[in-house]
Length: 415
Image (cartoon, rainbow, N blue to C red; front, side, top):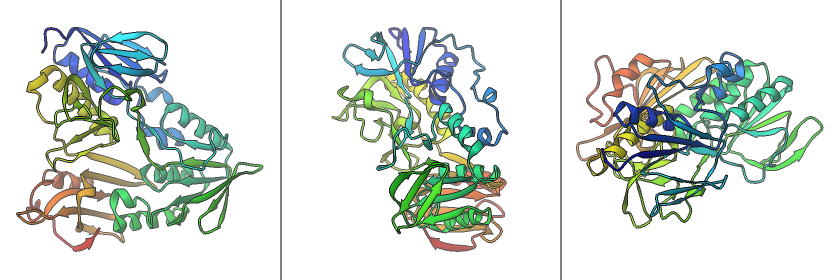
């Protein structure tokens, strides 16, 4: 640990930030820790925002994240950081105060992407990212009879499932030919799509929204095929953008997030590593050497926890920091079905059904890509088969023919 590192500032007050602060204290850092966040809330669990909170199974009192390590941090909430001066080791804030640091952890996360053409600040059109968003959508759902969800990714599918659980008619719209197409591929996306249809969700796939209009009750949407959709509430879930605007002119490479080396240290536009500055969570783009050398962002709960810890370790270790090489993991619950995944599914060029079958919606599928030693397993998806996922998790990164006991290949599909 650097003897000169007396104050560490964490920009962002979410899960990755809290995880980093905990690890700093666990590693014996006794200096000042300052956590700055633009929301007024302390770190809270975002996972239930599209599910349990909207169904009433989770209350807002259960959302705050609790630390089991004494943190002794300075909280500066409701305070947006507007700039970074690397040479002076100084942060500029919206409130006008400059905050100095010896070490900096960037954990500003992402924000919901706005759909071009959609009305801004309309009372019946929402995105979901924050607790305040979820509260507003919950209030709107109380009076809604018809909801349109624009976006067939995990967030859109979870909102659709939640709305059906509340007895609301749902129309889901996505430009892809299947739901979850970009995340899980066409074959599994088709299975999940049929599950949504069976639950009463009306799917409009392969089309986008070309027009918007206000109606007496809410909003009217015109699709690319000229079909009209009327809704009391519209929830847009078309992806996210990293919160990096405050880093413009800082010298850091912020192309699709904060570019980092394999240890999580931030890089300049010239590719130079900046000592004393690391990034963590959704905003960080780094090369996971478990898979390859291409920098990517990973927007999952477990990654935010693990990368927050790794960022703290790297900051304290400095030049001796170790690469961060996790196996990403995530999950989703939709219409009573558990969907879990491990690895980097997008790297797969083919998919193997390892066990179970699509008809019962109980299966496990492996994603592989070619290598010098033959097909290599790069990811696994389990639908209602959590124990099988645990067996296959440790095989990710190995040749695909190294199968856990009781696993069997059933069929092979191009993804």
